[in-house]
Image 1: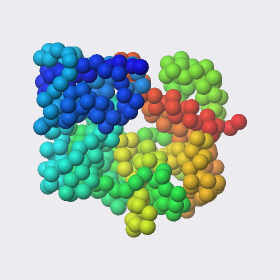
Image 2: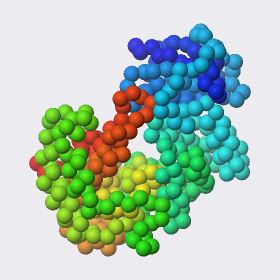
Image 3: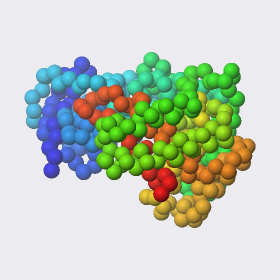
Image 4: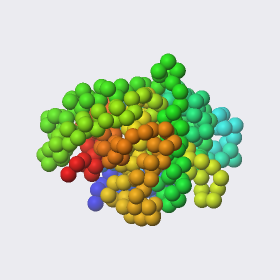
Length: 401
């Protein structure tokens, strides 16, 4: 049993009440708020989960009392300043929820009757907003990178993305309309085909002057050099990989470099890329409802090699632990069908096996995440997002035997 400290703070970081209680089994935002409500009374909002999102030891969990919330209970002292939270993000501060809710109401022109966490970490956060104007999602990130990308997408690819309702560059906020359910839950092959066609639509958008204003460029020709900086034993061990995982990652290097050369030959042009295109970032309408696939989550959008989007999309659904997905059970050759569908839609004439593209895409992701997060710091001491080693471990499923 883990005992955690709860702090109820006010705007300005003063402690209204505190307590120590055993952590609940349900540690989602909603679960922690329900737990805190039993201590402090109804009407609390989670600010920081003490590092639970990172899987680390539990520091103080911080909550704030919502407007109209109950008079706080608790057993600990009140009135003291809350302990500092080094690296605190804007969405982890008291008053953030009320501020962004007011902003969203102004954008929607209607009241928000429900505001709840979808997920939150030091990297970013998403809340769902319900009200007379329908359901919308508000996202905030560490910087304005996704805001800039989402605006570009709204201008050039509006039919292929969730409707963008509003943005605030200074606060890194973007508000989008609910656009359906995640593709991963669909057993309808036509939904998956629509997704790869939508991907091809994105990749065949024209680029003015060879670029897209506001989108960063990931030079595919530079990938082998970036991999040289990543594929070293000291770097990989520093990411927490085991000796066996390190050796597997290094052993695949010749196959990865060979795939890079063949992908370059097959698809030499740069294109607008989503950057994190998997089946949970594609939305489809409910069954028997008109509509098409829409992409969302543009935090990794860039100009680069479009086949890296395709490779990650296929790798994600073809991981061994997803073998029981209804769509895979119904279509054992799902990856081949989707790869063929993409090539047809994009006008790509190549005999490249999809597994080679998947392998390379995962090493490209590892290199990108290593560059971003190797020196990153947040509110949990000693923790970095482990996307780079995850990508390399995942790549082992697609490496030559």
